[in-house]
Image (cartoon, rainbow over all chains, first blue to last red):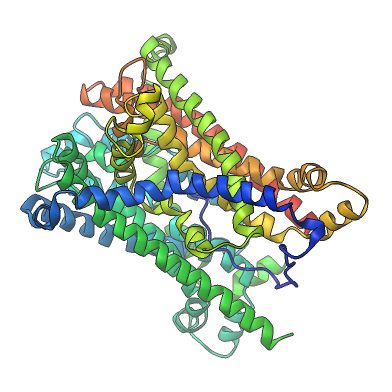
Length: 300
Length: 278
């Protein structure tokens, strides 16, 4: 549902030269009009908000900027965000591998339905993603009384934040791997087994090299969402400063206290993370395109 | 038969499927079921009384109305942007292509405070809009702006690949048969792109309905005016009204499930028609 998927290019056809083919070209004025409208829209709705984050962050100078980042509450928010991603991303990575292996390499009934269920978290509002864990683990929830008897705190504590993050980033790795592994089929793995490889050898030497870029792609997107999630985490966090605030929640608190420069300073770190994510994503797409065209060069 | 043979050759089917089902149930299915179990403790009239109060109905109108409008705006400009990225060459094209995904990567809270700063009374854009009588920040218009921001890549990224794979022979044929460029685009290109456009529209709409982080900063959150449905769930939770929050959540979940089915059908249609034209 996130609409992002690693586009593996199809067979390279003679790409039409759009701009020199008079049959499929708009007149100069129309072209300029379309370009102007679409680029103005892009600049207003995407570029400007991105630039504004950095300008607002530095509005009161570097000293205020740095002070906002090294302040203890900010540091603890950064630590919690890193911890959350460090737990949620590997768990969803393992899940993504397992789900893609089962769905792509074997036939069983209800496979299509299972694929739809895996995508389900993308169509659930983040607020509901937080609410469901309150209903299960909260004081009034199913396990609430049992948990409080045993002194275990999940809601308004770190475990709840991690659970909500796992939920909203659940499909990222699986949905990158499933279509790719389906397209790759099972021949290479079968050949490895026939030649005497063990199951793990087959996985490490054949499967993993074949899916490494798509896997990395899924992990990067999963990580960006894990570090940036706001709505779901906000419901289960309790907003305890220095304890259960992630970076996006810290941004909200600072903003609501009218500490705009500090709020945008922390926000600028998250915006940098987004830019690094997009850069890595573009690099991976470039790698995959290169490899695909090289492979086609080998077998014309 | 090939399936049966495969199952015998490759290892790990039971382990991977078992783990998948267990993890899916624990993280997603059982907690989601809690919404419906909790809602089922209400009688129908109690449930109806909660989800049909004027304040809650006003949030549906805003959430669904602004999401529809935002998705429609994204269809128009998203298709133009996809067209520019595929058909024209201009400086900085690769950079712009990469930045289209910014709303996927930028945390929603960051987008929210940044849009608010831009459209506030003294902001970069607000200072020119307010004298014209256009108030964006802290009004329903602000909700629309935030939803346009987060929905744009859904349209561009579903239309762009179909446009790239579109065989120009169809357009050449139309042109050689005497069609004007506009007739060709209107009669040949747009109909072929239609499944992708509708999928992009539905994806943008579905995302917008549930959106929270980018909206709440710019919305002003005035009851009956600029309050979205996800926010009223939060408000009820903060008042310890768990039953009320859950009932509204159940309404939203049902809407999401219907949208998910619709999107699956649209995506299947897009794939079928893509096979036909390439």
